[in-house]
Image 1 (spheres, helix red, strand yellow):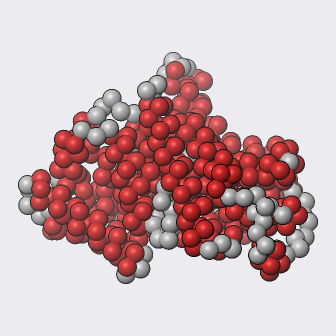
Image 2 (cartoon, helix red, strand yellow; image 1 turned 90 degrees about the horizontal axis):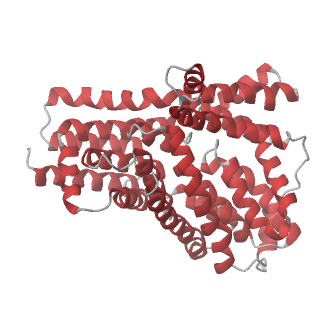
Length: 446
């Protein structure tokens, strides 16, 4: 099978299969992506002897770049969680901004503390503090929780070293430092508009009468613990980002200079995260009385949640590899080019539709990158970093009932399904649209 319409039909059948297996059959995304890979391979007429090798090369090519980086990022996030670093940032911002600006404080907490931790971890980690603030100030939980959730989701989708953001940067061969820099420029305003500004328009700050009963069941008295300093916590979180951005800025230096060589080495994601982990071990661990045995326990506990993420990303890489080797990617690229749609908008749209359908931002981003990547050859003027940001922007939106993140927010905030859809889901859609607009604007200067 080699005609473009037939190849595209095979691709659409594979996408429908992914959605059906994940949403209806409740099959794990790793198995759904694997099944779709073989559907594309067989349906496109790939030689049977090449299917398995193509699948393996896709997995290896993707995880070979990411596995160690994701592992180091997980350790960094675990150290922040166990040390109380996220709580320190939250308390400092609440003190600086005041309880009357608590929604702004929680948005900023999500933006900063969310850099090294996954969405669910960050939200569950900070929800006790939200309960305490809501109880003391009688502020609506939605008024605090939605800005935090939107900010965490935006950072999760758009800023490396988060796994999906890191994966698509690698797939697109984009400069990670530039992705971080552009991501910050786009993510922060999107989080502001869809967070504290949005919730102020659609939600009253005063707590509903039913909130006190909810908090009495969920807000337990928390034992005070010694928290790390604000400065050292921020440095631990931002250190790998600063190093990776430094590598991008070093591109303007003479290639043979010592400064260029040093910054290029330190800014490599593997080296940057390794340095950050070593610093976290000292600053948030040994320097605060934690033993090597304690560090080992934290490290071991950070790895089990990675299994699912690594498998999904690996299967996504295999799906992309099959698309390329089968010729489906070329057929898709030719068809998308004929549509004459701005590739930035297209990348955003594909990621958004995939997230809406399958309920996983990670799967949406990996799938979108695989489908958009073949088209980039015909658009050499479009920055790969901008495409990476556009894919992340698309994946923020439509966080609804198919996404576990939606249920985490709904249940921990104790709101109805309709309230969660109106306040949180629409906030993610707004963040996605704002991020797209900012990405398009930024592309004019790149």
